[in-house]
Length: 329
Image (cartoon, rainbow, N blue to C red; front, side, top):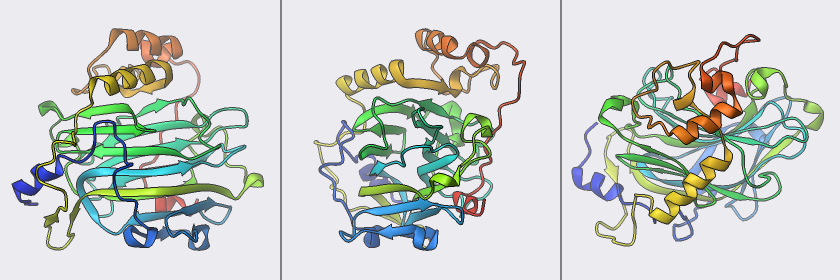
């Protein structure tokens, strides 16, 4: 694909360093999205800017952006289902898997339900050029109950950096390195939101499955932000309405925000692929190993992060099939 370099330069400058979406336009559902699957399990509320997605025994549900985007800031306020949610997966993510089956790119927020009394967990993941064999997962706890109220989840994607935010706090930063090569997402992607049955893997490797006694499971989306460079899928051209010279917007994380990110990771990160010695004898090239972080995770799971032998049960890995296909589970 060939894009005008001037547009790429503009697209690299997208959002205030705090990751805040409060100055960016919130669009209506019909303006930016269409239903992906789920029939009446997707419900647009009267304000036109809020959406309910539900999962029942028949199907999950989901929606997708009208446009493809090459870089941008993408955000939503999300309220997750409450009570017993084992096996339930809510996803807010970018992908081009429908266009590039064997070399797709993907940026994920995945919310993993749990048994009653246990908290939801958040997982982020990055795939570039079909690099699914690597898997760049990180998993976190939270400092709040995401089923009690709405919270902001955002993805900033530029030519050289990806940042995930929760309530405008950066929780993960991926910088493009030469060694990563095509593993850094570089092709236009659509934005998706789905809820589906992940019983086979999502809760303790599939030990706890969705219990439809508690259905329907309803997740709510509002404050939808699509702020980026839209790409025409046929002509492969990009357009940007962003100002070419805006000194008030930055893509790098400022020192105070970086401190918040480090504090979050110290308190809430439960898994990082960079330290998983059962999967990688040598960490992937982009990993910068932090000895303190390594020691903390080793205490959390000495087998995974200490390189010892696992004596009981293999960890089930998730299939990377489409979330839409998962509605048939």
